[in-house]
Image (cartoon, rainbow, N blue to C red):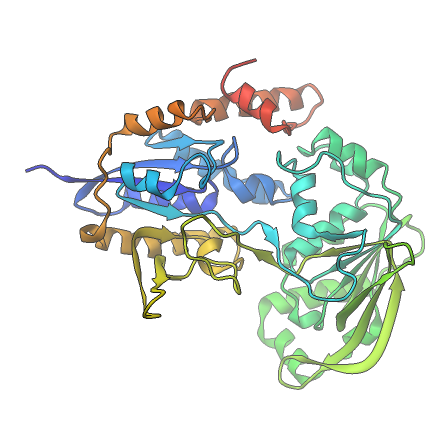
Length: 459
């Protein structure tokens, strides 16, 4: 008896896509599986390679686990292939039984306040992509401000603040690209201000991220006593939640430190609601204006009417990530995700308004649930999606050309210079060799064309 075979495409070669492939290959099932992983970047690993600060080697250790999955050799990779341009949904239906979208959320969520369009106003996600050497971002970044505001109280906000305040020479042991080191080295920054709308017991960052912030050399941590006059709810949070307890302990330890000797200062401002980026008169950011908030007794905050303003020349918004729409795939513009039921993509009928399953199409990771949770949470997320994929066998597509060679022939016919697993190994070895010459783990290759040529053995 011939077993069914699932030809599966996964769009997105970050943790979400790789975890989904691994879970399916290890799952109990009554059919064979062949998986092709597509990514618009020439290298795999997505957010771990291009969304984690270079001085986070412990988090980047996740790459080791992902590498083990790919190096088994039972998953094909096609890098430098753009869905919607190089490969369409119709193409996938012709060659596969189903597709899982694991494209993540890589753009900055909006912050709707006056002045956000001023010169000197930036998205933290764009800044992260720059300092992580993302090939699709400019090589230069305008680091000309001595005083900077970072809006947000999550891990991305702390990453951005840390990279802005940290002395560039202290980043040399990491895989920081040469152009990023030079840019940060020339930065005139002396003060970085981090603003959060709620109090210290309501922050979204983790204790690990917070501790790292306080380890910066020659950087004073500046906190304000008025932010630590806790109400009963805040006191209960400290007493009843281990993570909040640790964060409170770290912050209060910083309050006891002597300040005034360092060349740079990192200020933490709580109970600060963004109101406006103030124009300096020339179309540039000149100050950050905010309203002082206060606990509302129900776990939230309320405005006090007290308006404050701090002179800054640049503002980074770190208020969350947002997904991007994909051609031919439903998209929720409000939440920046693909509408789905536990990973099964749902589409609304234009005539009846009814919602139904879009057979053969699935989602996992941040494009499925939104940019919440740490990288490790994508495993349980992928398990849910894979469970439905397996159970939906009767609703898979029936591809007319399902052979593994047919996809290669299609890409070749369109002149797509894709990269594969062997190509990633070549690029990986090249980057490590660059780093070895300077006593570092690796130095990233940044230009896309260089990545492609090295991966394809064209140099």
